[in-house]
Image (cartoon, rainbow over all chains, first blue to last red; front, side, top):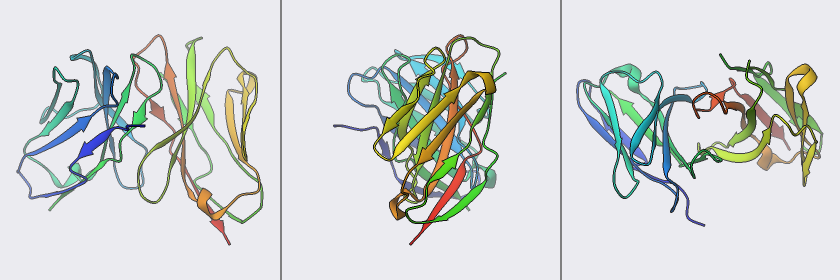
Length: 111
Length: 115
């Protein structure tokens, strides 16, 4: 069965650069979520979209923005990167509010 | 506000031992879902189980079993006859139906199964 696809898997950036993370949900899933997991920490909710509209927002910095496109894929844009943004970024998808299935994550390293 | 507490930061056992991972949750909502996710060393988050607040029936899936007790706000996870492949970080999580559909995770329990 198709799973959530995230790209890239690894990303290395310098401070103050920008990064774009992509997420392709499981086919027919209409809801996408983004989570950030710092080293040794639990995943923290950033933002979610249902049917291309933002449905909820967590502790997402103003430097970050995201959207869900007409084909339901989502992108997380991160600007003015800081060292503290280094983390594992997960995307999850669900059919409406059903079980969230996670992608393999994008590991972002900010140098 | 919702909160999930996994008091056991790390557990280490020898293969074939049984092990129980504890999870205690807090919520004021009457309708909610509880989850367990597994994060192996490769890093992905793997869904294991979901339980709704109205279903306290225990569940068994192979070597895995879950004990949900509303009276103590606990949702514990037991692995029977543990195997090295069970080594991972396990997260308990909560979603409130009335609130946003975001998962609130516990701090995770790192389980190491030694051969």
